[in-house]
Amino acid sequence: MARRMEIDSLAVMGGSFDPIHLGHLIIAERAAEALRADRVLFIPCNIPPHKEAAGLTPGVHRLRMIALAARGNTKFRASDIELARGGVSYTVDTIEQLRGVYGPRVKIWFVIGADSLNELPTWRDYRKLLALCTIVTAARPGFDLEMWRGDGALSREEVARLRAHILPAPLIGISSSEIRRRRREGLSIRHLVPAAVERYIVEHGLYRGSRRGGRMKCLASR
Image (cartoon, rainbow, N blue to C red; front, side, top):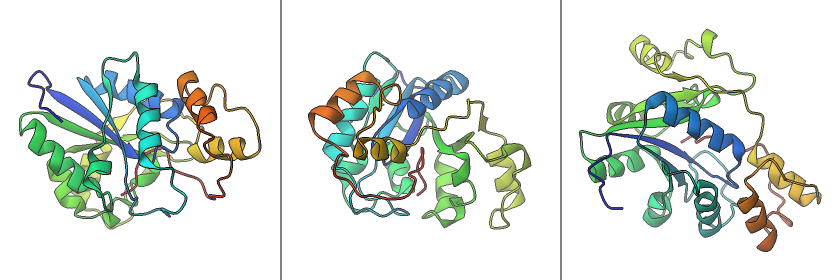
């Protein structure tokens, strides 16, 4: 990943992206606008720390679907940084690696879903992560960000810092698990994913035989 000197700010979205869907893209677009980010990186994980890895679609497919979804948007990029690194994908390692690539001057925003806020203290070296980047929280259905005060594990200062960076975004109910379920049941996924991603899924027979259960989160929890 070559350093681009013209980049002043970078928004990072991590997760399984199994598959990437329109909800991810809408949040990424709002993040680029609100944060005035020069670039948005979509980073599919290799092995998720807090999720069952069995049945995860191979990274090469998830990365290609992201690249297809990002086409036509000059700010969007797919990154294989976690797939190339291998092992369990810890966000702090990824942000530290990105910091080494882009340098100390570049502002790095890490975008998470609101339901990941209470899980943040369980992430590896989360205080180091808070020092390396600014965490931005996107709204999710069923989570009242206005009422969130932490669950006691975070300090008052940490809660205040996290509450200061809330991303105004529409509440989007699309989930990757819904898309996988619809594929298993032979239902349409049109208007849930970009057309190019839908074609890729159909052409490669993805999600037809998957038995993965549970709802995948839109944004990373690691």
